[in-house]
Figure 1 (tube, rainbow, N blue to C red):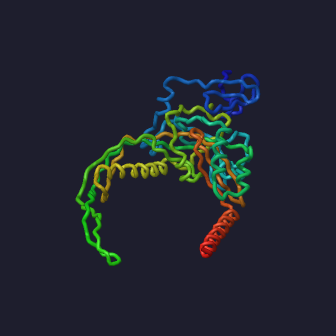
Figure 2: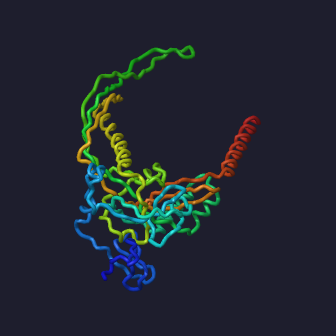
Figure 3: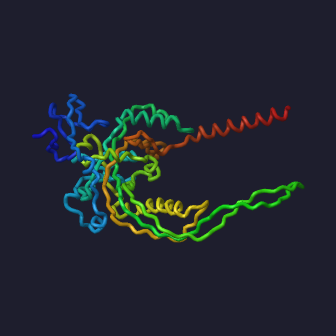
Length: 369
């Protein structure tokens, strides 16, 4: 049997060590699997056209019509979190697990799911320790955080290494618009204030009609394909260095978990179109020119639409405070941290009280003068 053959259990994310039989794990920042027991290392084969293979995208219209080839589909077993709705891939013999997204017990086995296979994966670059250091710096910089959160920052609790699903969309767009261009000019007027007369410049806008067209090639417009994390925090983790994408291989997932997508392709496409339109409107404003712009109508044609299913890496911790879950997310490439945080009412009240005392002392000593 080859060294990189999957284990006989049928779990596509398990790879036995050729030396001792223990399960190998992907080593962040390295293109290899390592054994935590005997130290054996096993390289993940790479080819010169790995990058080109990773960038191969599927035709969007074919996918929306359910005409993707069989090799683009796969079946996986996932567990569903009844609290936050996350779907996480686990080992075949796992029946209950704590959800890494909200720290609630995961008890619902949803069975096998057929879905679009990931085309590419962005391998972990940061180790758990490096991610923990990034998270600690972020946590310790929070104002009015509860002491329990500070203790959590100092603890050695493990972080969960997760691959989260993304849709990446490509499209060529041509947009026609009508609007107005506003050019600023100034008029001088005389005003009287408090018995004094003076002149001042008043800014005004001279509007004239504008119309035209703009075009843009979009590459890899990212949409998170899961609902388990707040979208504003996930967007704040960007940018991702997609130049490091590798063709999907289960070896990159060894020792980590992957979340299944819960945002279907059509819904993800709608979100991508909204992001594209934001960029197109900026292009239109630049094309109109002037100091201010008004857009009255905008019609966009999309062509050559393609997509990829990607897996992007995060380190994550879920912290429960007063029966509520708070999530901290670390971009496992850059170390950028985002997350929810509780507020200490006692610390806020203390700060307000201190401010009132200082204000009172300032007034008191001011009156003594």
